[in-house]
Length: 166
Length: 299
Image (cartoon, rainbow over all chains, first blue to last red):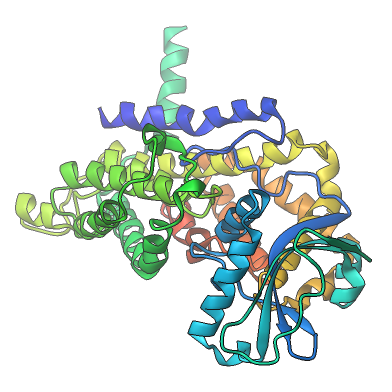
């Protein structure tokens, strides 16, 4: 019985190989996976949706994904991408700004505004060590919210949905 | 003809399922069960957070596809905690014939549920597959409460081919997962060109960039290694060779140990360069059955 159960396991582990025929978009499963990580073709640019914190002097820096949700970086990244695509960018920005104010972490105390952006970044420029401005090709604003209770908040420089090419 | 078949079957049995003491699967049971307790125990808060994710993100995979909507978070929490209890019982070797399969079922469910909220992580496949093998194996015939009850000792003096076949099965499922990962790269859009390292370099850049943009510490190593394309060719070709050669671990102890050293180093390299963590691989428990393979039986 035990040998039969153990023997059935090997075909179950091997069978997901069928999904290779479905191309790179085949959905993976668990615990019987086809391990597509690192096999997709990478393009010259990469797009990712994330938060930018804005200081009173107008400078910006990416904010930690803990303001976007729970479950780890990759889980949050996917969830936020889906929600922003469905038009929730402004809601996410307001929620993140409220969280940032209530958590009041020392490293984020100078942030007066939170933006949800979808950035298009040049990978080779990034690998060459250029700064963020140097490897950013486009930033699309999907939501913006002032951090509650913080003075010196900036006026929004672009309406949600507008893009800026660089 | 039947004599020839008999000889082949006997040779395969002596190599793949040599007689061994019950301590071989017992040590593996303790290591894998103990790892489960550590892994789930330290991530309990993370998993409880996942159970409370917005239901729009629920995309069930594997056995969780029986659900149309997420479980109430308290039920998912209870199932997670139940696997800590069964994990402790399995590690101690209490009622293994019942607790082994029950623990495996709970663990498979919980990790499948965790992977049903955005993307499939491959951190836990090896752990789940090893637990399945151990659940079906006589893994609590030594170093267990079961052995104390039945034989009055933790180290019963008996040998069986079933004890020797347990690490072989665990190695076989591990080898298959690596082989699939290798074939996936060749079946992907780059085909054999994947070995040039350009794709790997792009993946490293994407991974580092997305971490930086999502607020994690920048990985300085990426920009140091990024321009060295030759290094990526060596890493890509090496990992492909390792993955496609993985089935050899089932046949030969030396190949298994070589593979274990290579794969263990590869995952630590991935951790250092890309900051991608495969905790079960990094712990070394994934490769323990390769180190505990008994010698093939002599005629």
